[in-house]
Length: 324
Image (cartoon, rainbow, N blue to C red; front, side):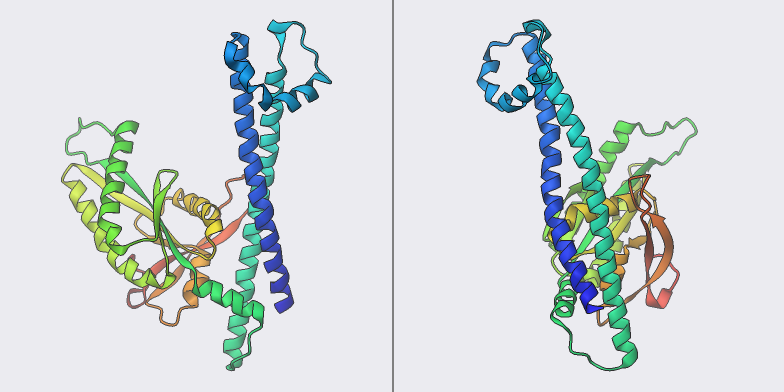
């Protein structure tokens, strides 16, 4: 089993390096395509200063002209062809990137599964085994994991009269921004190591995963106070939020993308946690909360790829089955 984990760890490292290069190429091709179409459009109007940027297209221009010879100045579609080819390559690299991300995620899930199997075996044998260097590195990765939190507010108008109108899309965005700002102001006491927005949803990263119990203890009254405050303005606020564990910062975007998909399932006012969170939380010595299986869900944004993963609801141990 150790050899298997060692092999998977090496694969994860290799795929991570390849993925970084592929992501760079994806952005490069899309940007170069955009640039080519812009310059082709300007060239149609014979803008004088365009010659200053000829060096950007010299090599692709020569390659295209081996197959396409412009018939006069006004009919030169070389830049448009370059843009189309770059766009096509960008889509190919994007598909490759998605496949690599899926493969990397599967490898990490397999690594965590093997870790859990090893830990359960050690507990059953009731003896302390001398861990290999790979085991020590993996255990250390779990212990040094960071806590990742993402939240999405849902706002609706409280109708006090039948003639009250629903909120417009623009109104919803304005109220969401106000809720996020209030939430951020009220939660800064916890001193997250990083905060930001991913697809308009607020996320927070805490340096130590073990902060999770204190975080949950304080986040609940914070959210309740926000709900009460906005109710005064005639706005009903509910929340979807997800907790996960983050071992490596370079996996942040991929983990946020997965958590964003979970948010789209609209589990209102339940603390949903990922399988990665569960594995890391199970590794804690003292566990204040229990995790109840919510079910298995396909978290892949690619409809042609099935990525079923278990999701859990976090509950108080002394109030099993009740919402937090």
